[in-house]
Length: 168
Image (cartoon, rainbow, N blue to C red):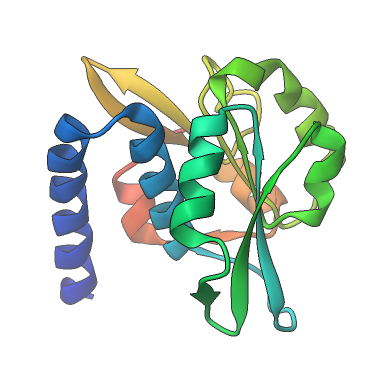
C-alpha cells in the first residue's frame, strides 16, 4: 500500500512538471490514461478497450498516437472519435471536451447505469454527473470526482485516486 501511495505521489509531482512544458491537450490525454489505471470495470471478456472522444481533435489525435492498439491487460486500446453522445454506449471511457460540453447530457442519458467512465472538461459537469471533471483551481489543473456517479456506473475507483481528487 505504501508503495502504491509513493508511486501515486510521484505521478502527481511528475504531472506538475509535465504540465509546465506541455500543451493542455497532452496533459488531458496523459491524465485520462492515468485515471484508467485507477478505475476497475466489471469483469468481461478480452477484446477491445474503447476510449471515445467527443470534441477536442487534439486530445483525440494525441491519444490515438500514444495508445491506439496498445495492450491493456487481455484487451487492446481502441481510440475512437465519436460524432455524438449516442455513440457512447459502446465505450469503456468517454472524454467530452470543453468545446462539446453541451453534448454531455446526451452522453449521460445514453450510458445511464452502464460501466462507462466519463471524463469531462466543462464548468459544472462534475455536479451534473460526470465521473471525473477537469477544473482549474488557483491556476492549477485539478479534477472533481463524483462518487455517486461512479457507484451508479458500477465502476470502482481506487482510494489513491479519490484522495487526490476534489470529491463531490
